[in-house]
Image 1 (tube, protein in one colour):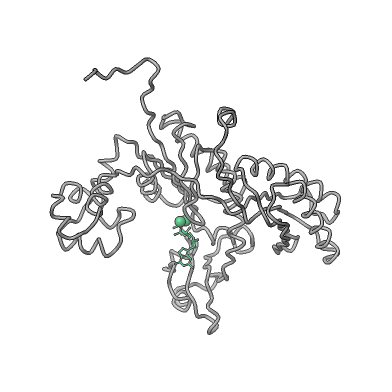
Image 2 (cartoon, rainbow, N blue to C red):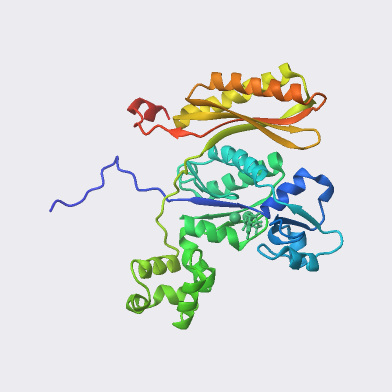
Length: 375
Ligand code: DGT
Ligand code: CA
Ligand code: CA
């Protein structure tokens, strides 16, 4: 066989560097921004079931409320007993939190090579190219992201950086709230060594119980155990998966989830109910939406405007216009919706507004080589 030669044009594969970002006490922090009067107090966000006054469960609590012993998943009645007099209980408002998430995700997309939104308050970002494989550069990107989110949304988040998604996620969990933790490739073994199996991300409680019954207590013990022993207890590819996790190995790519909507929000320089002023802001936002529609190569069916008035209420108005990629038409629809809203709500001033296209359909067609080279 010919000896394998590395040609001068061949590049050594770059170090993969992944960032994981998770917002701190997400729903509670968003509510604290929306209602400045509750800032500094313990805050509990509840999913009221409506059966009796306090039936339902806690969705989350801010860190002040956690100090009192309030936790996500706890019955609201329990939380009331733990709470102090000044503790604020609020119903959750998922639509509003989604708006905040969408806005931030749109911003984060521009800060990385690929973004994968993993939940309402979490994302993985592949920054291998953007950082050119440098851990220092990746850390600087993360610090900038934290600063941007703090300045623009007044939120804190915890960030983990690692050579793969698993390590990034676990690094992020190591320091919360407002943490930034880097686990470099060379430090993975050391990071994993100390970890009990129940702290390995993605290993469920049932599996943990089985491992404990086998006297496998730490990631190190799991990584070093005889695979045959695992094969006796677990089927399929689970033994391999468990050993990979225990070694901090994860080859899964950061994959963009196909967004269902594209939106742009903006706070007006001053509160206004002047249709012309607001419409001209809208036109500017439509420019951003147009760029995203083109970049993602999508069509949409529904146009919405989101309005936040000076009493801080959020309203959404939507119209379905048939599958199209015509943002100019979408803008005209948005302006009509705005005019209708202003007619119906005379005297109310708009503080913040947004334009959104949704019910997206993705074009499957291959990008042309030219498109690709221009990217
Ligand atoms: P963290 O990350 O520990 O600082 O606090 P959170 O509140 O951000 O917790 P996380 O990241 O696990 O969840 C993100 C949001 O998802 C959280 O703000 C509320 C919601 N959530 C979490 N756990 C539950 C739950 O058990 N029930 C409901 N309805 N919502 C939940
Ligand atoms: Ca969180
Ligand atoms: Ca989360």
